[in-house]
Length: 172
Image 1 (tube, rainbow, N blue to C red):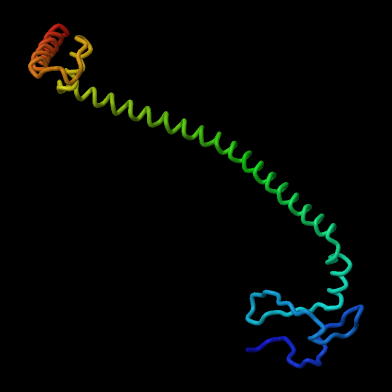
Image 2 (cartoon, rainbow, N blue to C red):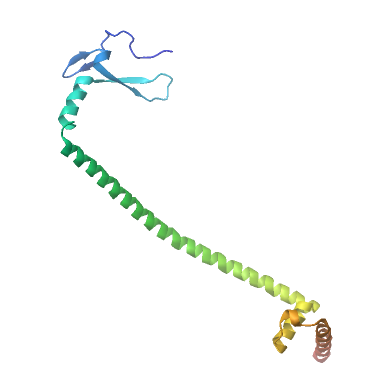
């Protein structure tokens, strides 16, 4: 495996502005992700890292550590609240759009079903179906569909046929 990391310990890998020329054991090695096959290594001075940690992140300073932890918690809560608030606004906006679409869809479906029902009623009227005649009898005599006997249906059918014939004769 070919790597661009120096194998010799005594080779100088970095020149630090404070500490001068550094070898591998004096540096912290990091890897940059790249698209290529070989990784790209970078080096940081261990003495500079230790100085930074002493200056900004003291182990014994518990007040500062607690302050930073509380600050981070507050920031995460604040960002979560902002995120939830923006999600609420978006859902309200989308809900209005969805409600309008659903209302249009329901109206279309209602009109479609109305048309189908009218066609079915027209077909029943033209053929003098049992359902049509039952509905006529139930409206007039306040019966239920299941209580209408077959002999009443036959009689009513013949009456309607006679009326139709009479109406046609009068129209001509």
